Structures are given as structure tokens and as C-alpha cells.
Length: 420
Ligand code: AMP
Image 1 (cartoon, rainbow, N blue to C red):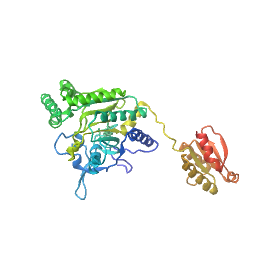
Image 2 (cartoon, helix red, strand yellow):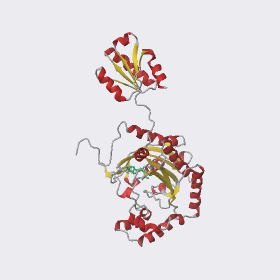
Image 3 (cartoon, rainbow, N blue to C red):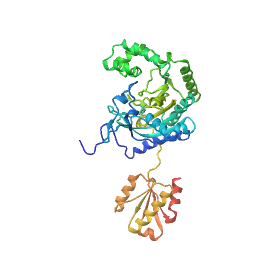
Image 4 (tube, rainbow, N blue to C red):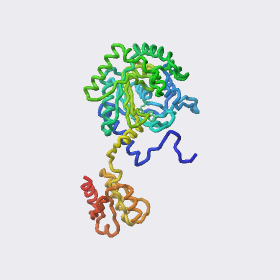
């Protein structure tokens, strides 16, 4: 193993590509920030029980993919595999649900960890931006979140994504469906692992990607035929609100999500340019999760969008983001006096909001100009002894090649004028 190798299933974000990740995070957060969502940050690890909630409908994410470990002090911790449980835990701990208006609306951005089989778009360390609206049962809230994710993707220029929508029912109708589905699955020719899954979390079997399994599932009972009246009406309202907003979605009666706590509205954003790892984001309602982790009844809804996959989706669509210039002016000093003067000019440009950098390290003119070129700066600012004696520096436009002497006091204005 080489010393300089990131662990399997992980990769580093490095310039210039890292700028796109930042831009994607910011674009996803922007609609949330103007919609009443407050920023929350929770630890990268939690007590393992927060995610592994005893028996219940366990999932692969918790049983197979979690990085769980014991600390030197004997605490059982897990690197967070997802954001929702942590955010809800933090909100309960801080009593946010008692402090003010419900829903408590929160957004977050961070790293998540799953011990998965790595492939393109599927990593062991990945990045999500998420939003949770805690403590309100209102179809408009579900619709709001879907619209906000839709707006975020559209603002990035993403077009070839689809929204899949389903309702998973509630604690009244879901168990009836679950039993019917289990009956159906028990009659199929399935391997042992899948049969076991059918006993623990039968809805998950619907998600099986293998063709042999999918074929047998053709006649499986659908949840939509089992929804109780309240769930049906709720779902209709969500659909109507989305339609009124001009947000196109596809009803997908087979859509179940990888986590056990979803109820009613569930949705996924899929991108058709991504191959098998096509989900760029997803979420839904989790009315029972608060009680599952020992809190009061707090019906809630949320989503998480994958930053890594959103970047891949942008690449697949050939969308180039308009990123702000990393460096607009690169200063090249010739001689000691010029170093002091231009260093001060660079600071002045930066304070004026202009991205500027400096030829650090003792280099000749040639080497320094190479650095200036590599920086991608639109302008170089060069000064030697003779320039200083005349009270000027040479401002060179790297695109046109044009070079003009500019009075030292007028550098900021001259650059600003030319950038506008
Ligand atoms: P989930 O928390 O499973 O609902 O995932 C939400 C989003 O996070 C997915 O739609 C993906 O975009 C992203 N995601 C989940 N798992 C991974 C992973 N292993 N690698 C990269 N992105 C992931």
C-alpha cells in the first residue's frame, strides 16, 4: 500500500474540482436559507443505539453498513450513516420542539459513512446536504421540501432528473399491507437471505434490483391499494400541491427507501445519466421516528441530497457551473522594494473584494509569470524599481495582452473598472 492513498471507498476533494462541490452545497442550501430553515451541525458520531433501534424493521444501512466501534472508555459509538436521526436527537436534546413554533425547520451539510461496496457514485464516505421539518403534519410541508429540492437542482442547471413519489401509509394501514406482502413473498422462489429479509423488512424486497426477483414481484400487492382514507387524502393533497407548483413527478408504487422510519410521503430524485447509482437525493415523512428514539410524538418530514452524486449528475449532463474566479489579479514583484509595495496592493485588492494572489518565493520574472499564468488570473500586476520611481505598476490584461501603467493609488479602481 502506498503511503499516499486515501482509504478504500473514499476520495479527496481537491482544487479545482472541489470548487464545484462547494458550489453545489451552496446551491442546495440557498433555497432552504430563504425558507425558514436554520443551520444545524451535529457530531460525526453518535451513540450506536440512535441508529440501531433494537429489532423492528432493520435495514442494511444499519445492520451491515454502519461503522460501529467501542471507544477506549467503553462507549459504543457509530459514525453517522445518515443525518435525520442525529438532527432529531439534537432537536429533542435542546428542546427545540418546545421552544417555539412548530415545525422546527433545520438544514445541515456534512459527511456520512457507510461500509458499502464502493463503485462509481457509491462511496464509504460521502457528503449530503439535508433538511428536516420537525413536529408538523401538513401536506404543504411535504410539498415545500420537494419543491425546495427541485428548485435547488434546477438552479444548478440540472434538467434530466425525475421525482419518484409514493406513500408508505401509516401505523394503521401499513401493517395490513406488510402482512399481505409477506404472505405473497413467502410463496415465491427466493434465496434464504431474501426470505429472511421478507420476514424482517418485506418492503425492502420490492427494492431488489435482481431481474429474477423483479420478475416474481410482478403480481405483488401494492401499498396504494391498502392506504387508509386519511393516508389517501394526505397523499392526494401533496400531489395536488406539487402539480399546482408545476413540479412534475411520477407515482412509483414500488418506491421504498433504505431507512426503516418512513411513513406516508416518500420520494426520490433520480438522474438518468448515472447508471445503477441513480438516486441523487431522497426523503420522506417519518412520523414515528421521534417515539422510536424515546421522544414525544413529532410527525416530521425531511430529505437528504447527495453532493457527490449531484456533481456526477452535472458532469453527466455536461453542465458547467459558473464559478467565481479564484484569482483575478496576480502580482509579480521585481525586487525587494516592489515586494513590499505589491504585497500591500494585493491586500488592498482583497479587502476591496477582488480575488488577488502574489508571487511568493524568490523567483525570476519568468518563473513568476508562469505562476501568474497557472493561477488563471485575468490580470497581472508587475512592478520593478523603475515603475516604483514613477509611482506606477504595469497592469497587464492576460486575455488581450494589453499592458498599461497604472498609478499605484489607482490600482483597485483600474482593476474594478476592467472587470466590470
Ligand atoms: P439516503 O440517506 O440513503 O436516503 O441517501 C440520500 C442520498 O445520499 C442518496 O440519494 C445519494 O445521493 C446519497 N448517498 C447515499 N449513500 C451514498 C454513498 N454510499 N455514496 C454516495 N452517495 C450516497
